[in-house]
Image (cartoon, rainbow, N blue to C red; front, side, top):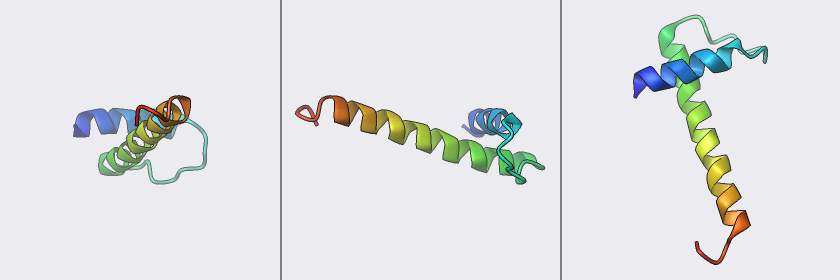
Length: 55
């Protein structure tokens, strides 16, 4: 899981957003985990807004 989070964090660090915590691999893993959690939250809220009766 750390490999996936590190990969996502590495991709997200390449986007010029002013993130300065991309120096080490462990910081990329932390950023990657936050990006994955945020993406899952956006997807879940989309499905809940789209069809709230199933929830």
